[in-house]
Length: 441
Ligand SMILES: [Zn+2]
Image (cartoon, rainbow, N blue to C red; front, side, top):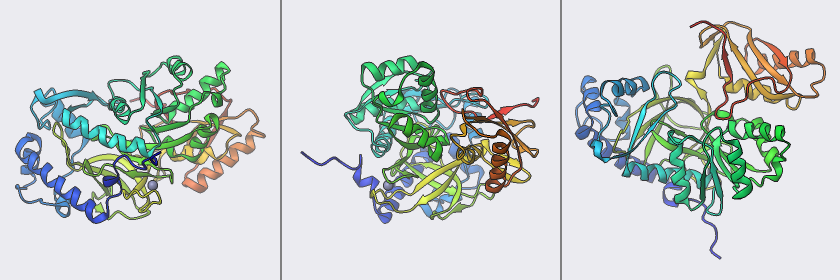
């Protein structure tokens, strides 16, 4: 018997720092040449910034190029339909178009050529292997077909596992795949397994007997929160590993290994990550303990290559080296600028509130809602939070005091916690919504 492979692409995933730089630099140079020749969007943008071809030749010069903002992509799409002036290939060469969820305004459209699809599949396979998906697994995919996450479907097939598309809002079909097809490895948002726990509880189904061996979760910070993870692992007797991509950039770019927590960069040769100071825009030297906003540059894309694209995702660098042998830096996602709240001048991510409050389980269920009485990000103190208590919470007034005290101690803001009975807060099957608007637009 041959020993099991440890990586999907050993050469790329274990590349030395020197070789990594060579790989990224060569690809960057090709991508920039391609953009100077094919992208109306970047030709105009760079000309406006006073840049000429040849001004940026390598990674050291990358910071000379201006950032690309999501709003620019929206404008480009609106002014130059169907795929914007940042489309850099012939429309005939586009084989697929995804849309982002469009939580604010119109959705953005992401086109892929056959080559782009292959690149997306390659990094998705590296991430899946790292998160312990194997060819023997049967993988139900509870994700809508129009999202970029649907591209994971063909990557699951390419890895050699058995794909069972089930779609969103079809929990019975999902459980049917588990029972009838012995589906045993799930790729989903972090909210989905939590939703499944409640759903099964309501139907009297023992989650531990479903036979699910692993979850690979992404799309929101939940999978990185220890209490959330433990709850899923305990309920299913399964491993939970986290992954992260970017809808406008590349399906999967980061993935956790067995040594977790923290997700390795696995996008070598496909995209280049930078971490910037979100206030000043300065590109920071990547080192352990660094926090900042992720910025990506495409390295091997034909349809809509993006250069220095600001993601608004904030990360913490947790590891520069790892026992698994992967050399990609490992990060954890702290939250998104879009979600960030400001209480008395302090930045607070809703995911961090959930993280802190989660420590009170089982006296609480882990479900909570932050009430927004003004237009975010500003929250006038105290922050009003409704928290579900568990079946045996003890003295409620005491519990409320303890939660408020811990929030003040850990996140440095005053709160006003209202405890509500288990099962009374809204549940989300796709992505958790931790805030609730109580203000007029
Ligand atoms: Zn590792």
